Image 1: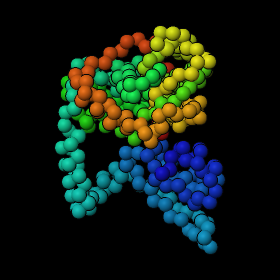
Image 2 (image 1 turned 30 degrees about the horizontal axis):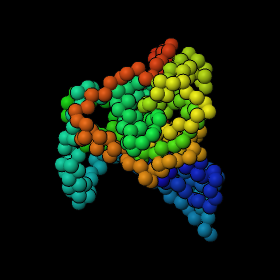
Image 3 (image 1 turned 90 degrees about the horizontal axis):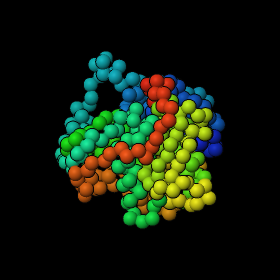
Image 4 (image 1 turned 60 degrees about the vertical axis):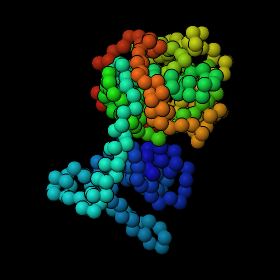
Length: 316
């Protein structure tokens, strides 16, 4: 599976690979890049394009290649029709899926806010709910939770009213799992600094949190934007070790959270639940839910006019 992570982290370190193809990334390249002698083809998500890559091989070595990027929308406009047998099979699976995911799992008494302009730059009531469920999953001594806003998708609002499995799966489409880390207060502060470092670009790294409150100043230089952090009402201690619940994308260093990549894991992702499954179970058990904004994230000197209308790619 090719992605910017492969281009930046895998291909430079691995020799002998001719090509990396296939991906679920928010970028698409008009032609493959060459990294450490390997072709890296990134063709985007949501099936907008189909890549065709031909390799010319002589004596076991790739000597040249031809690449074509096909637009599926343009192909349909030209009269491309689906294979009847494949289309029938897809419809049968869609019907089965529709029946299952369309079922009501609960209700919300407040409007759940998954809009990008909220979850990627300020406190969201849905972000609060997700982070709280992550923090409280083990009924153990987990101090804080951090969820990247880019992991909350659809950019829509839900309710008040019925919630279905489809709603939750659409909002949390990635296969991210819960993990719990041990981090120092200094590392936690660095993580928050990273989280607010690209708000102007609506970066998905923005931190929705639980168990802590933080204040950030948009007018400050990047790296100096976090002005106050408290955990359970007490000032963050840089030398204290805190239990941090997050998802495996973040714990692996995704979205710029490299400071968490080597932190000890008290709950490894392989043992943690899928976030979508965790939230479906909690909504079923707690319905009706009514999450609110409570002031855990404070923004100073916000100038939303500087925030780009188009987000940067998210590789979760």
